[in-house]
Every structure is written in structure tokens, then in C-alpha cells.
Image (cartoon, rainbow, N blue to C red):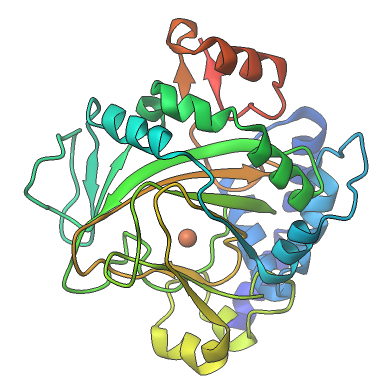
Length: 324
Ligand SMILES: [Fe+2]
């Protein structure tokens, strides 16, 4: 079966290369066949294909990056922690503004069909807000305007970063780890290369869903062939423990802390056993080639002056946001 799959995706190679070229030249979106091919080439080549695609599609920086100790650490380990980055005031303002919007429950046992208010009754492992709704919130606009985040992303990607994928969600206690809420080990694979930023809006320790990452598994050739042969799926704890027991990092955070992570490496959020966890997350990518994505839109009158200036003056970096 696996040999047949490899054969199939070698047959797709001309389509894939054609779509890659027209994406680069005319920014024509790729098909789902090419996206599936990208995942399979990643598995077959143990990551090297992504490095080539990233190199081909990225927009180069005008200035060369100087040596940066913390970026080197991020490149080596796959993660970087910044304690107390956002102020208590910003976190509080964001939490307050979230109360004004509704969201969706999602979990293995329940999914909202339409937007719901966040009442006390917990219906699923996760309650999330849409990117369109989040974008209207002033504290969110402040986070998205932060130059430091762009700076780290551009140095890590060695490319002009594109901001996209704006997420915010609560996790609540469940009896079992939830597949829908990404509480089992997995690697992300939506783009050729990206950097995720987790912004903690609540303190997080062993009880309320600490994030776990296998150090170094974001590098080419670092995920074992046995794990990759399982495909693009959720992976059981015992398998990851067998290969990487000593490399598993489990993080505790306080609100306002940041975790930069190349989530191409193996990761999961542990299930919440008490209280809850509120997380805000954005992503920077070197290209939007890959999986389908949503471009949230915002009316000009809903933008702060600073945010409007940033988004309109740096169109390449903010192409994941539309002002109408
Ligand atoms: Fe993930």
C-alpha cells in the first residue's frame, strides 16, 4: 500500500511542479492534489522537499540577517520562550474584549452548528473564536502590529514573513485527550515553512493543558521513518516516548508569555484536568502555498490608526488580512 502511495505521488510530480511555478509567477492558488502531494513528499523525503519548496517560493529579505543568538537557539531546538512579553494590561483588555464576541465549541463529542455564547456549561474540549471576529478587537490589532514578532519571524524564516492564521481558544477539562483539540502528538503541515507564536492569556501548568514539544524534530531527517510511515495522523504517546523520551519538553507559562515554535516538530497540548486555558495564536509563513486558508476581513472604520497604517503600508507581510 505504501509503495503504491509513493508511486502515485511520483506520478503527480509534474502537476505539483507546474502548480508551484504558477503559484510563484502568478500567485495562483494550488489545488488540493498539490497540497496532498506536498505532505507526501515531506513524508517520503523526511522533510527535505519542504526546504526546497520554501527556498523556491520565499520572498528574500533586502538586508542579510546578522548573527543572532536567540534565533540560532530557535533554529536548533525548534522553540523559543519569551517570558512576560505582553503586559498584564494588554492580556486583561483582550480577555475583556473577548466577552463581547461569541464562538464555537469543538471536540470529539460536540460541535457547535452556529455561534454560541461562552456560558458556564462546558460542552466540548475547545471553544474558539473566528478570525474575522478577533480582528475587530483593538488588543488583537495591537498584537498583530508588533514589530518584534515580525522581526523574529523574518529572521527564522530567512524571508519576508506573511502573517496569517489568527486563532484564539479556550481549552476545558475532558476525561480523555481530544483528537479535535490537538491533544495527541502530531506535526503540522499546512505550508512549506512557518513559525507559530503561542501567546498565553492564562497561566498554564501541569493541570491546565501544558504544551509539549519534541526538541529538534522540526529539522530535516529528524522524525523517525517509523513515525512518518504512519502518515499525517495523530500519534500515540507510547510511540513518541519510545523514540524521543529524553527530548520531550513540557512547558509551564504565565499569562503574557510567548512561545515561538516551528510546529513541524512533534507537539501536542496535554488535556486540561482542572480550570481552563486561554490561548491566542498567530502564524508567520514564507508562502501561502499548501492547505486552504481563510483571509479574514475588517472594515477600515474598525481599525486603529496604527493597525490601518501597518496593514496598508506592508501589503506583502499582511496579505493574510483584507481591509474592506
Ligand atoms: Fe498542531
